[in-house]
Image 1 (cartoon, helix red, strand yellow):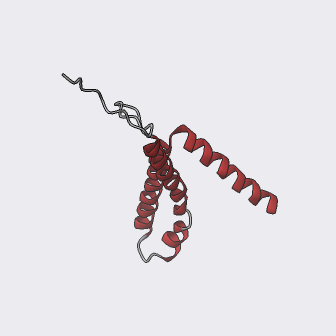
Image 2: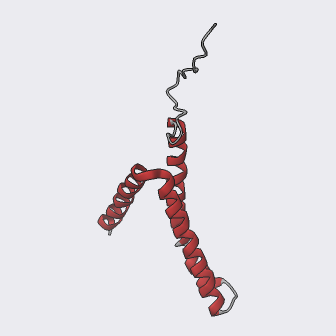
Image 3: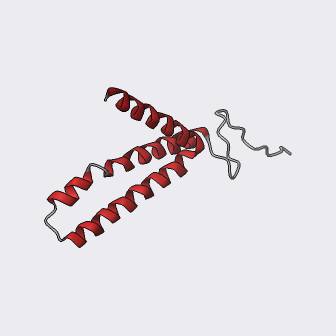
Length: 105
């Protein structure tokens, strides 16, 4: 009788529960960093909300708080997806951008 042996994968992607494959880690890293970077797009919307939306002051405050919560939710979920390495990478990129701007002034 032939013994059944598990198929060994040639591309080093693990099927062990709890372990993520390299491809999955890469996609999570990319999605996480995009979400973290995209969360900063909220700042240009504040002048639009506060100055040009034809709604009441209390509605503007409500919209601003909602946009703020969505921004931080996107950043937090992005940090979770990217993992510690993605967060550190994004933090060093952010520091470089801020340093360049402060030196340009």
